[in-house]
Image (cartoon, rainbow, N blue to C red; front, side, top):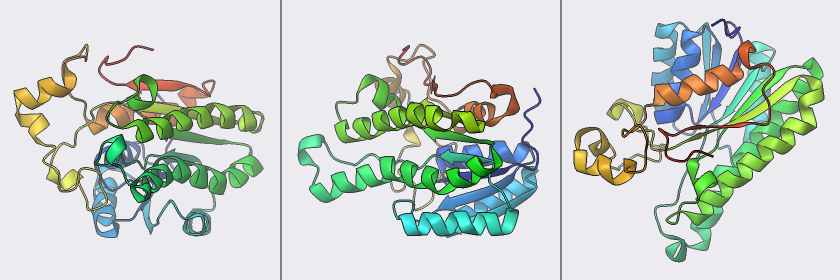
Length: 266
């Protein structure tokens, strides 16, 4: 399949770890110019080096707190100054609070909302004026199956990701006449391949998530409802993102695609 992504400028937020890293490396194989936006600069540089090895035409790391509009606007200006354009934005950053709903503090809930919802709003708002001006662009938002099915352990996270799905639809209608497509991908249980996939900014940092690769008991606890009966890998989620960013998906917008091993079928 011809993706048309060679030399395209692609911004990936949270691109230093796990799903974000998988997305960066998938675009690298397409020969894209990739911007890694993350708070973990050291891990981002490692991923940028790997991306170049895999075929990325160029890379740029911009350390950014995507919950701060001033930093996001500076990031967009930096990208435009270096590359002169922005073709694709992948809003990947996400973070579920490590506490149940009744135990979450106000500060924790605010952080959850800022990272999962406002980051997507901020980054979209920063790149859309440029995309509208050139009458072309792709935005792919990373949602979650928690939005579609509701996660009883993470109601605030579920609500934020549900809002991301709604934002995707509304933006798709708002900017479609400018040749811009906006879509959403909802993962479920995508586990890093190895410890190198997890930087300090990752939701998996400090968590022994790798037991899901090695422990049948741990896997069964999270995939009992999955039709495919296994956890997913970053590259599998990334393939969907690349497709929705490509020329092959030019007539697809406002849609939500689940990459979930058949956990929910909505």
